[in-house]
Length: 106
Image (cartoon, rainbow, N blue to C red; front, side, top):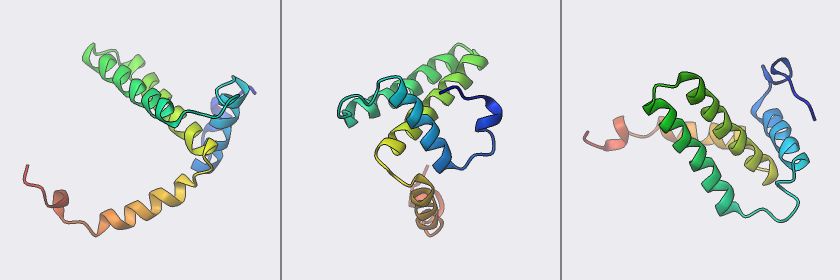
């Protein structure tokens, strides 16, 4: 499955989950039952790589690693059939009701 930037831009989160998951399936990441802990740690790894890029002031690599993070998250949501749009909407509603800085003194 070949995807271009124009095929990605403007897509809903649900559509992006489907696209990212389809690519991961095509590349063999879901051939066996997915180890969810491993999938989560791969997401953390992408964030760590973004941190390293930021530390080295490598803006292009920083952006790429953030994109990798989203791709892995969207793939996981797609594979687990999580409606992440709905989950984000519900969490934003709950967060709106929380106190300033969630009541923490910083």
